[in-house]
Image 1 (cartoon, rainbow, N blue to C red):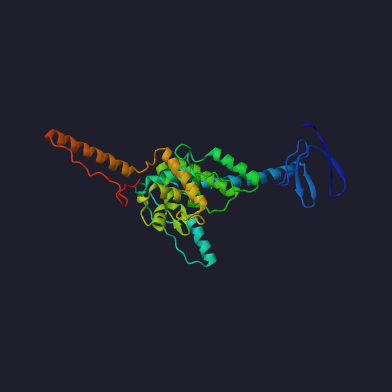
Image 2 (cartoon, one colour):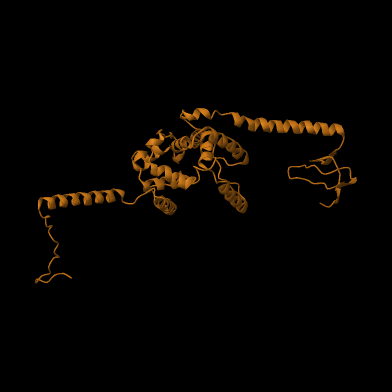
Length: 330
C-alpha cells in the first residue's frame, strides 16, 4: 500500500502529519510507525510514550482475558453429558415462553409428553429431517453451505437473521437460549452445538429435539403435538400428517398443520413427494399387500380344485341395465 500523508487537526489547532493513519468504526486501529491512536469525544489523542503503551497493553490483555473466560465457560458448562440419560423437564426456551405469557397476562401452561424415539413414527422422523436438516446424519453439527446461503441473504436484505441452523444447533438453542438473534448468542450456540455433537449420538440428538421443539402455542414435543392436532399418538402418524407437522416447525405459532395455508399445503406436498422418491413411503401399501395375498390364495384354491378334478366356480357376469323397450344401454 502506498504511503499517504494525512493532515489531522488536533484540539489545540496544531496540525501534524501521520503516515497511513487508519480509523475503525469501533474508534481505533493501529497505524504503522505512529504508535497507538484513540478516537475520543475531545479529539484525537496519540499515545506514543512507553508508559501509555504499557497501560494499553494491560487493558488489552484484560479485555481478551475476559472474552476467553466468557466463552470458555460454555466449553465447560452446562453439563452436556447428563443428557445421555436424563430428560430435561423444562428448557430455557420454555421458560422464555412462560415469561412472555405472564407479561401479556395469559394463563397458559406447557403441554409436553416425553416419548422415546422407538415410539415416534418413522415417517415423522424422516419428514422432519428432510424439512429441517437433510444432511443431519452426515454433518458434525454445522451445514456450512446452508450457513453461507443464509449469510448472503442477510447481506442482501441488510438484516441479521442468519438461519441455516441444523437440528443440533436448534437443540442447543431450545435447551439453553431464547429466540433472540444476535451475534453473541450465535457464537455461544456454536460452542454448545460442537459439544452436543461430540457428546451425544445422532439418535439421542434427534430424540431430544423431537421431544423439546415448539409445535404450537404452549405445545412442545411431538407427542403433545400429535395428540393436539390429530388426536393420536406420535407412533400412529401417517406420512401426510408427518409432512404437515414437519413444515410448520420454522414458525409453529403462526402455521397450523391441519389448516389450509397455501404454504403448509404446498410445502407438505414437496416433503411427501421426496419421501415417495426415496422409498420411505409406498403408496397404498396395505392395498397392494392385500391384493397380493388375495391372488396367492385364489391360486392355491384353483390348484387344489384341479388336483381333485373339480372345476372352478363360475362367477356371475355383470350385465348392463336395459333401457325401456328391451334396448341395452350404450
